[in-house]
Image: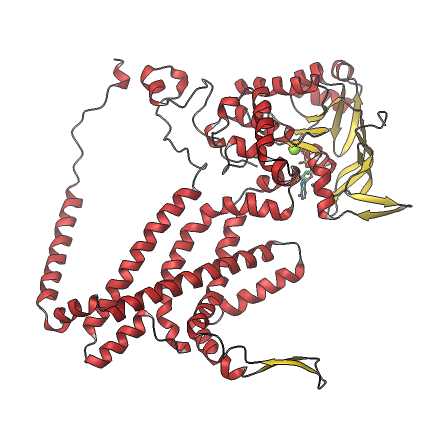
Length: 318
Length: 255
Ligand SMILES: Nc1ncnc2c1ncn2[C@@H]1O[C@H](COP(=O)(O)OP(=O)(O)OP(=O)(O)O)[C@@H](O)[C@H]1O
Ligand SMILES: [Mg+2]
């Protein structure tokens, strides 16, 4: 065999500082765990007792549902707002800008309190001709809405403003040539957006959106502001008030939050992989270009049927 | 009908703000002709091509393809802007190939080619796929149908881009420096495809620095500089005996 293709056998480089650091950290963790395990205030038996309590697991499920519904709505709204912001239509642009100004400029907690008060502020809404007595019908729009859905709306409207910026960044990251190529093929603006630009922007949109989902999961703990009390945090607080034990139930809530976050992170990983397709070569480029004709390399790339395949893919250049 | 030129540009003016990029451009390209457009950087070659399929709107003059005004409709002596969907319909008949290929990276080669025929023209998927394979055969890349563009060399990507444009059965093909982004050894494969296309009777406007291609394949040659056509005529005449001093100095640099 050619000496260049022989696998390298070398003594591994040592990292003494890394090893020392790991030992120190491990020691600290062990100490902390040991202390925590024996410390009265944590009331571990109670943690064990309530961790799998039906009320709490149900509340975790409700928290997850709030997160998912609010995020889905926020993503759709954010996409709309971003596209409006990037359109040529000055009216749509202004509306989108004003929305962002309002919802990013006020705390989500304050917004949620407002959502809770909507029912009192708009006790009834009459539809008719303004400045006359003519009235078609009167409704109480917020009375009928379940608190759960009100919470979803409150969370989604706030989040949409942030999603709009993320989506806008993603859309702007797609090279102009893509849009041009699509339009030159006769595709409409809508088709160009939906089929060409938005799918490509996903690669840029998904990582920050994953962060937003996780952040949303935690923001759901604020929805007590509008009177909804069936999600995880409110539920555990209620139980701890009943049994006069705060710390163990906080631990229970944290464990559930961590569990759900971990599940969401796995989902994010697979989404990122899916939308990364076609960007980086799925098979890592072999160290030698095919042109070298070395037997090992050709055998290593069975799909390469064409000898003029040049490995480094040319990225877009305008 | 056949004596209507494929492209008729009549005193075209195009400006960006106060910057006049095209000043009074008149070009006629007959059916089946290959017109080559050369000129220094910034002379407005790309802008002119982009006006032909209305990626840019012209500010003055008249531009028609196959007898139809592009982007406008004339009633009496008044011009009316076309709606976006009408403009899209016109673009669907005009193929365009870019310097940077602009293949859709999230789609396989086959998906790239059938996207517009199925979505824009409403052709059945099975038919579009069959056509796509014929075109891939024609550009010599049938075995790459299921591959993503990132796995292809620049030359292969550009051949796919040509196939993608041809899948719309255009009556006119515009090429904007199709080989300028390619490594020298890959230029030939793309020019060969274009030569084949010219021989099949396609009307083409080619912006290029490949003087050899212009000489061999071109039916007419336009030399552009500073937004005007300085000199035009049979490529062999213009290239061998450029009359204008600006043409001479440009050619002395590229040849
Ligand atoms: N969107 C735009 N806005 C403003 N100016 C532009 C725009 N596009 C092009 N220009 C200007 O128009 C002029 C002509 O550009 P164009 O791209 O048509 O030149 P070109 O002949 O194709 O040059 P190259 O050989 O570099 O591609 C240049 O001065 C350029 O700066
Ligand atoms: Mg150009």
